[in-house]
Length: 340
Image (cartoon, rainbow, N blue to C red; front, side, top):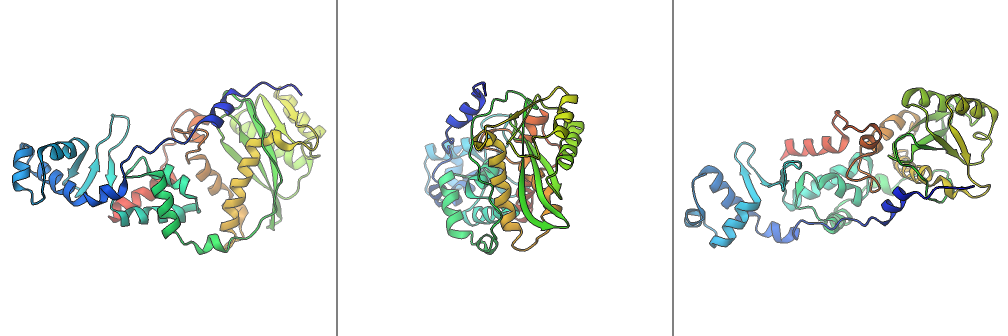
């Protein structure tokens, strides 16, 4: 089977994690009271220069230090909080947190959907300061003790590996796969579809993996989002049949199958299946109604930053606009702002 090199995939694969630009958090927290004193005096007395601030401040300061702090921080008298100034108009000012506040925020983000430290870092680094990837991982390992993660159950595994997939715009290529789940309300499978360009995912619970049921699922999402140029799947009978071929032929969609016993070509949807498995492995330790929680999972996944799509979310790439509803990440941060 001839394939076109996926340049977008290669770029995403070669992209390294960005280096944290924030200073050492421990050093900042050591000087936190000093920074607050300087910036608060400046906020209360806008006309004061560094010399007068040094005179009235109880801390041991010098002119260079005061100018540096005033250049990078400001104190908001309305909210009584210290903020790190943004570097441009496109990014917001970031709220400065003490160590105990940052630990609380890490715990709240983990409790949202049991995400790992790297996902928590991506969620909070736009809003709070100081946030360093290594420090967030350290705080996560030291202070997050989740009983649900410890008691997570094992779900049936779908053995797959990955392979580069060409996709240069939304709906250029969809990958589809079935995920076996424990029986609930008659449902035994999840039919997952992933747009390869944006990583936007959608799907629904299925009672069987019959050709008729899978064809109806594909047709319903074609009506909702439009037809893909290519629909890719493995060689399962649920995908290789006349019912599904009839559906895709209506919309001039090319149906592609990987080589027999070579599932690496479905890399996008297989990676998504692992994320879904991890999510429900934890959630089902206390609630078994996975079919009812499925829409919430898709919403959270599509509105969270993906390391292959950053700085945008799958939702933003697929629809080429922001989600005007408040994302779950922002809800957690908003709650924290109200608490402190």
